[in-house]
Image (cartoon, rainbow, N blue to C red; front, side, top):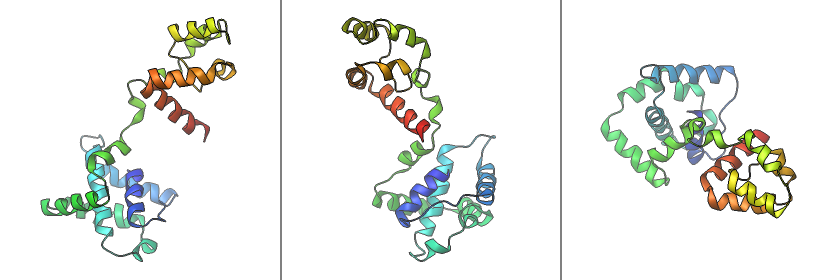
Length: 192
């Protein structure tokens, strides 16, 4: 939820950073618990809450950004503001989102749990390394790898040592574009 809130706040206050620390974390956690339905956080409800809060803040002017506090947007008054918001307010929130070239569906994608991606188990299938080692660096090895594995992955030490890795990476990008995307994305986050 902090990710969506920060994303929206940067549209209003470009230098905004969400404060770290235990108090901020506890305040947000408490808010999320109050917003949960049936013990499960509802992605759409979290997004609607963030939109409601940031839209309200967007009317306070630029100077408010330096006075903002976590409890202003995640405290009891903020939850009450969200609970009492009417249909007419949502119309103006949607208009504000369109003006910023956003929509609620896009914001939901920022929150969704990526660990349940249908191809997540193939980010680094270690069992393929045995096949990849066969005739490593030769044209025949390249063809065996292409026919028997899901090709290049940045996590594999075999792929890292293969002289044909660049060609294989390009081939992976063409044949398995979504798998390639999540492999590269996961690798970038693991390196940080």
